[in-house]
Length: 153
Image (tube, rainbow, N blue to C red):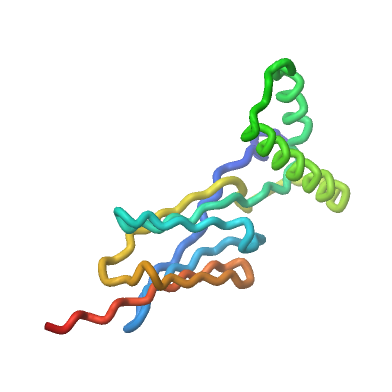
C-alpha cells in the first residue's frame, strides 16, 4: 500500500446548529474524544465561540518523529515554554507507545479523520453569553446558549 494514504488530514467535526423557544444549540460529533481534549473560547468583543482540539491519530509516526528529532540542533537552550512543549510531546509519545503495544495492527484502509480542528460560530445578539452550558456525552459535544428575554419598554 502507498504510505501517502496514511497521512493525517485535519479533522473537521460535523456540526448541527438548532434552536428552540428558549435556547440555541451547537452539537459537534467528536468520536473517541473526551471533554479534556476539547477547548472552548468565547471572544466577547465580536461574540464568536470557538471550539477546538485534537483527535489523536491511530497511526504510529514515531519513526518519522525520531528522524526529525535527530536532525535538530541539540545545543540550543530551551526556555520554559519549550520545556512545557517537550513534556507534552513526551506524554503523547508515551501514550502512543502504550497504544502501539495494545494495538499492533497494520491498516489497509483508514476512513476516520484525525488531527487538529477549530470551528468558530457567531453568537446571535439575543444569546446570553454569560449563560453558556456545555456537556460531552458519548463523543458528542452539546453547547447550549440561553436566549435573553426581550426587553419590555
